[in-house]
Length: 81
Image 1: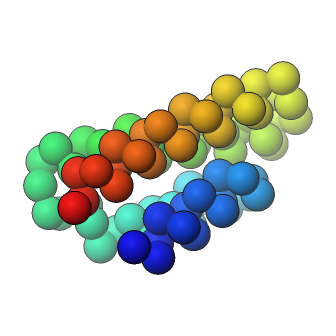
Image 2: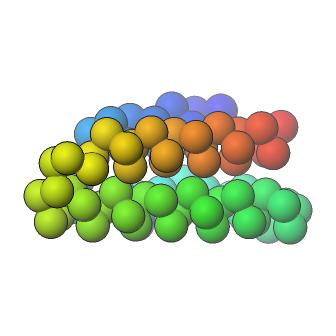
């Protein structure tokens, strides 16, 4: 699915609108099941954390936050198939 490639690019690139852009991309998936909705929410929380760390210039935590976001995105991908 193309939205997942865009989300992976967002994780790598960072930026000020990570959460807003992620919400838009995942909006179409959220209502399909309770389990998927939970995975999407967890992913968005990780994106909020990453956005905060990027904005706060906490470079020591960037890689860890990106790794966690990628793991959560993998769960969303698996549940959306």
